[in-house]
Image (cartoon, rainbow, N blue to C red; front, side, top):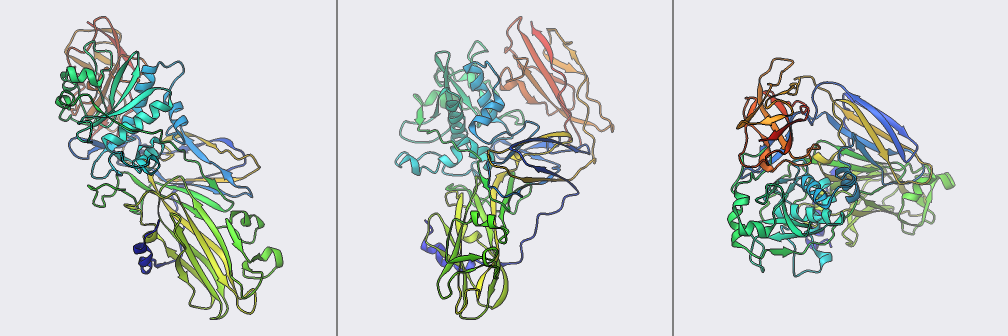
Length: 618
């Protein structure tokens, strides 16, 4: 509920100028769609995009996050141009980031006939991905762990422990949140999983990880540290109990992911705390479903206005999230069209100009009686601000027009009352009433346009409704175009005939040309036996003769490169030399292994991955 203190802050609700339309991008593509499944292609020129210009910056303690040096995407707009509500519109580009629901996430990372062990590893790989989460305790959305004393329905930990919300709304994370995301997805996939803490049984402290039960034992995965640990057989993922009995299994494994130079091991903590403290985790799941009314549009933006929420995190001092994006939902119905009436939640004493040919567009049936229309705004993204207003008519001082807001089921909060007469155009910021930073996430609010006409039913009314809602998004979850040919798939769940217009806006750059991938391995040659302490490959060539800054190497026991041999075998070399010293005593003699390499130039652009090569361990 909105507190009295917030209500008393009404003076901070201020008038703003007429809303500015979306910026125009140098390149734009528009597609008109009349079905609930539609494919089209977009060609993006240049040589750089948000994928091949990524770099990895430190949060703290050698934890890393992903940034991009160049981002071509500017906006993506879906507008309902028909006469029917559009149910659950969504876009996926190049089969990336199909994160509408837990089912679409799992479908994107699973392949047919996967074993339980392979499914657990695939979920780990997803929840540990540097594109999905970056550890930063000062910027994570709180609270940091569940409230054991509270009714589960009041557990605000679920906001960030819901993997669908986590990947779409928030980029920062923490160990308990990442572990919960992992556990919830594993359970949705039919696996038995639990989140466990390294601490005494009656407190939360130190560190949280996930465990999955398959092959008759538990297996531990640490998505926040991007780590799993192998038993002495160098094949089987270890359990918490294994690490308790032999903490060196953790100490010899690289923590932090491929972009980190490593961090202090939790090995001694596994030994210290046993049995682990199991954290209660419900199946916190939702989807990104929404409804677009006629005249309503939804906008993904790759930039932000600095509006965000951080939740109940005592360490967060209004730190802005990494890779923040602020999208928008804008409702501007055509009040002269009868279909606009369907977008009204509730009304009283209302007539429309298309009914009686009187103006304003929305006016009273009976004078000297209260009139109002109420609209509900509902989105799948956290609401972090907005603008409401429109165009109004007030003939005399005896007529009144007021605009109200209700958030979290509060009583109506008056946002504006007309003081002038005549044709009015007014817009108001509602940021301070939404007050998103430390409050629980809000996904809906109500707007009431109220007026009273004295003497004549047309003395006061509305000519235009405008409701603009600011949304929090993770930029790394947006449906992004990349250089070359892009395959765009649009879907919705609307049964009736409908129309929607999709507009992509982007810019292009050829400031730098990425290097070419390494062409072939040298030691060992492809398919040969490894009898050296290092692997060597042919140096990457550069079309513009720029220097190579470093390489990224992966070695896997699987041809599909589902996971590395261990986290020690997915590493940036931090060297321009086309070679890598192999961690010793990890390979099984006679077993075939698969490896590949990519290169990053001195400007900061990555090559594609090389072909996958093989060797056999000696």
